[in-house]
Length: 574
Image 1 (cartoon, helix red, strand yellow):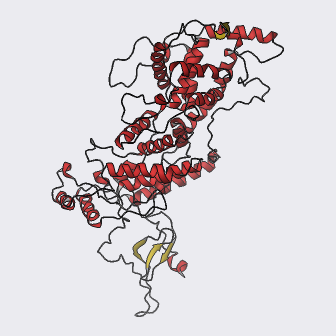
Image 2 (spheres, helix red, strand yellow; image 1 turned 90 degrees about the vertical axis):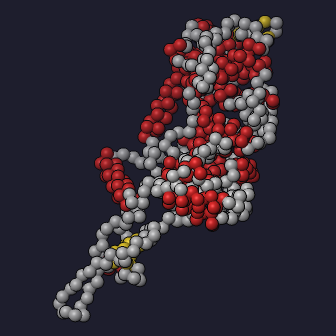
């Protein structure tokens, strides 16, 4: 019956842009897709007062506008807690132990809310009065009210009970939000950017990753920060457009979009630095020790990166000797102690990559001359080598790895260029523009579908399963593209019963250090100032770690300073 009564009403729904109408008991149209009730009523046919005549009237309803449904009252920190919950669940699906979400991350987040006085704290009795006073004098930005002491949070652990909401304070916060004439779906969204956060860390989307990495580091899980960020970019961990998974009752619009809408890739340095600030802010104790059996130890990570870089297995003996001689494998050096400025804040993945580059410089020099001459020498010996392992040829390794690296780098650049930053859920900064945004989105989707059919474009394939290795090399290949089993004897010489490098030199990575205090780098890295083979090695590991080559270059400078203090003799390890 509804189909006959609504077939002449073809307007699109202002909420979801669908044309799927039904009739309420009062005769008004409602959308069957999103249950939005309009102010339009069906045509009324009146035949009581005149035969063979039809009177049509369209009612616009009462003049009094109904109050828009803004959903439930929620706070910005509740939104971040939902993000953390989604990220923790994704990590658990990747193999991280459930203890990370239910215990470690939950306690970190609860401690943060208490330290930042957003929850789990006693609110002064005059705080509500202070909030109401701001409503009367909204021009004073610095006198905005504090956030409630107890929030109705969706706990990270399903077994935990919900916190109680202070309704009186929530209503006063709503008045503050309305008085600022800046619309937002959350209660305190309009105050988020006004607060003076010098004394405490203001929560941001990159900080959600800092929380996750801090929990992973506490549990010593086999996931480095570079892997965590790569999983985020590949879509295995919710981060970009994660707010579209918010419950329907949590209305997100206006300034909330500036808080939760991310339109840039997470940066390694920013996430790492925020993690250190968080650990100090929460007054966390010394983290669990990073021992030689831990995945984050340089000796363990060097195995992984040597395999991924297609380098000989024998290089691991040299990386272990470098780690031991410099002292960067000690527990006190690797273990994080929050707030202790005397201890070095280790970036485990970058440190391991830098150790491998140091070994390559010790053995091959990487000056665009010496490594090629060694390669020619190894090639001649391989021609006469009928038995045993092949000698490692740097030139052949360079050609094989460079080809694979160029292919993967091009694929990565294309994927980033084609990435659609928009989410499936339409975004709008004002309720007035909501219908326009929905109609525009529907038009864009229709045009994309039409052009896709005309151009014959194929739908994007499903994202591949996450893997710790981006480049894989199999020793079963008969084309000689795998160098794991190759020998280094062709470039080594025996002295005093030990194999040492034939190369007696080690050139410095830089000549002049940077004197700018706010720069954050020991020296500036420019490709034109260094040999091409050295730059290629940095480019290879920067691709594996998804960071800039300058980060690895800076780590090399730090290792150089440590090497100067260690008993090195002309670049040889004794």
